[in-house]
Image (tube, rainbow, N blue to C red; front, side, top):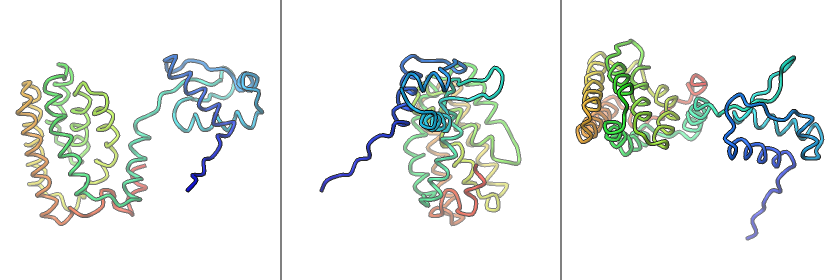
Length: 240
């Protein structure tokens, strides 16, 4: 069977060319790009086409368009928050379950904790310890700790993946099913994880994270959430 392939529009070609320029030349945030008129001349295209391309580049977080005196087109770098919110929305639409989310975390996060114990800087170790000591009514510090561990692995993929999961991690808590003893056990587990990472004990960090996630699996089973969606359908707009 023949596969239908859409021919690229002229605006797509401008998007590709400008993106490649930003990436291959490693243009920094704030670098001024050619104006709309200059892009029209460079690519031999009309204003409507170039404006469509600029809209797409701005949507993707690669450029910022400033209006008025001193305005222009400037390089931006994509914001991981946008990616995180998009993932939350996809999880909600596809009704991905907490069981699936947990299985992924059990495969990835113990290894991330081990790498953090080896590669974290002194400043990162201190930040992890401080996040583990935070005792607030909301679960923001819980998410922050897991993201900090990802940032401390020395692995760019793990860092970005755990940052991108910030929004679904924050959205998946069911406050009405979290009791004080759950909170206490979570904080104890986080302090243990932070301590072994700070002490540069990779094997201990991996074990501590595995125990923590295994305990979390038991909690989800206990309260009947294990097969519920990560982001409940009525709440998906709240993560934006």
